[in-house]
Length: 213
Image (cartoon, rainbow, N blue to C red; front, side, top):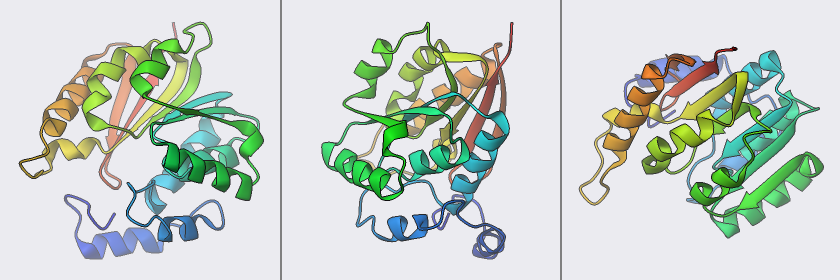
């Protein structure tokens, strides 16, 4: 939240004062990230917990495991759910596995290591997911869109992180993120099978529900 594009420091402090991590001990994991790409923060984590608790998904797909914070949150919110998470970096996958063991959820989470653009097409459309959480390489979001849409069950919920970064000012050596996110956001809102809303937490969440036939 401290790098949010729009919020004032006063508003961020106010939001944080009314929010806590739903799983005890996750704050310490974030303090130990040591320069890796950040996991979900306190506000986004609490939102994910609430949304998963309400929707009660039986099967969850996550892209961008990082060190496992969001996976642990989803496992805590849905004790009966089957969770599949994808991480491209082996060193982060190893860290996530250790954290899964620490929090006692390792038997309920399947961690796939590799490129999500290769793994997602291999996932059967005949066994769709009730909830998807996308928090990975932003440039791939438009290419992932049709793949994930076909693997989201009717009535299923899809949450995408960092969608406000369409408006961010990136340094010159980082190209394509703004354009990719603009395409993804536009594709999502134009998709007639989805009910979609933007939620202004952290760097922005896009929350969709797939209409039932």
